[in-house]
Length: 356
Ligand code: AQP
Image (cartoon, rainbow, N blue to C red; front, top):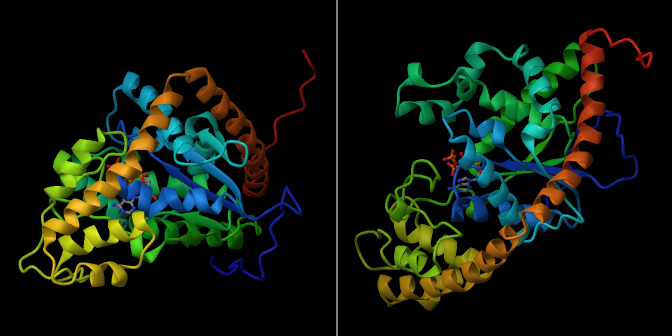
């Protein structure tokens, strides 16, 4: 557990004095299933952190539409995301699970922060460069460009201490902290400076077929990605067919042996054993044996998860109730922050309703 990182000089009005410190994170409903990168890089930490912190976890549908989505599919995937979060152990009794677009404050604060963000600063975000590379910058949406600023709003609204994410989000977290500091300095101390919570060992799970690239919903080939809701035997086959490196030694060396190092990382995370321990066990044995055993571990992990998620998906009303409870919890916090922001920026408050 990281040590506390709140800036000593920052006195943030906390609407839940005495409450536990907060964690917040989100995931996009951009595929039918989450993958091992999402799970090992971020979601597993969500499950662990919910015990000691006050957790807010959202399904980032506003972010999803930065690239074209089929509306019907997007709605389905939003519920699939909720089912997967619950199936993996996010407890709705402890954690607020909500849908980003249902809290208007995200987009509202996003606008205020856009007005504090330099164009050049936004341009430096490498994820935009990566994601716009395929179709060209001109064909990318402005939303894709300003995505990291909306993400800053997602985070700052809840004044969390920690944001559990994968390595690919580190730069966005730095921008979030910069914007928080800028707002606090220009107006009045309002935002907590959140710390990224990135577990080094699993910060970047790579593509099984292209082990120097990150495993990704949108850019991995089907053979390169382990999707948690896929048929477990299909996933086992993908592990057995993973690209490995020249030579035969089973050794963790991400530069020289990215393929085998990725498999060792996944093995270690699923078995709760150290990489060194696994290297020792497989000393003198071939890649095939390691892959075969890892395939079995993967089947043992994904089978109960998938069964539970599919069962949850059969009761959509229950999932919508969970999201509505989460929405209310999140809205209560977000609206207070937004009110502070609007007041500090100088927006005129609406006149009190006369009831007419
Ligand atoms: N390969 C990965 N290794 C470690 N962490 C990862 N994450 C994603 N891929 C890896 C982490 O998962 C969380 C949710 O990700 P997201 O849905 O918000 O989108 P993303 O980071 O852009 O992931 P994808 O799979 O590449 O999605 P698409 O293709 O839709 O853009 C984040 O915390 C992320 O760090």
